[in-house]
Length: 303
Image (cartoon, rainbow, N blue to C red; front, side, top):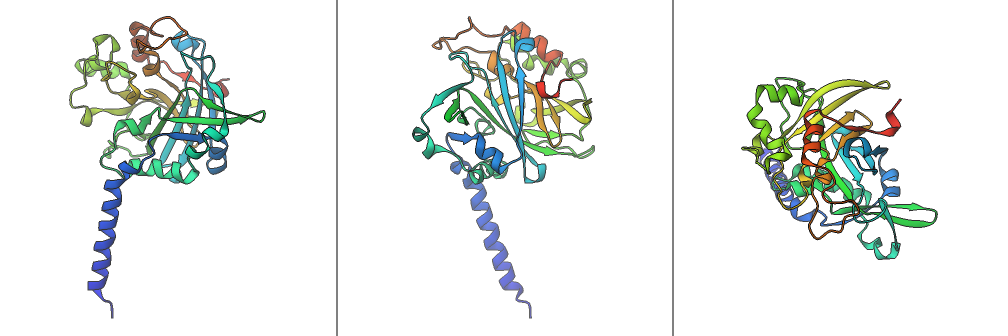
């Protein structure tokens, strides 16, 4: 005979444990650490791409992008090694013994990405972060990235009338609208996207901030999807890291294969001694890139 009371007790206990786990994950996220490129290649199918910044930002620099799926393609993790403005090159030699105790394992990386999805208290600082560094080995030596942006995305294919609204969701099934088309329909909302407007904020950001599909295109033999980020420049005294790669091209199975990193080129801390003079890129140049949806495509996918 089935003991329904016992089954109900087990179900309640399981739900309580799940709830306790969900509300606590934000506290368990790694505060910083190092991610080994060799470990990524061992644990995941990593797609790596090279982006040159000259055309978009008038600066001779290189972005090294690593993109890989988790959980059947429902989660995408992207690590972008950005050009440093204070040091030459993207990497510097490091003593492995000085960092080995802070290297994240493959299971820790998976848990990090999953915990962000489960947590109700997570902040944008954990979804987009500069707190991790990438480490690679070459010619018997170890090198650590000077600047590494880590981003975590949900990936879905929901068609209208279903709408995926959770922050950092790439929904390839959503209807398409370009930034210029959006500007014609709702020009008052574009004010907050323009870096020239002295950091005006997007009202009701928590409800309206989202990625919009701009268009579908074909790259090689793949169907690609170009997205843009409807958000503002809320940080006035630092990098707007929450913007992340705010325009990008996504290919299923290959991940993000090109993008723009306006936040990194828009600000200079007054105490930093930049190799380049002043703020790397003017607000006028940034806005021109935004409104025209300019993107750096990976060298590996150019004809």
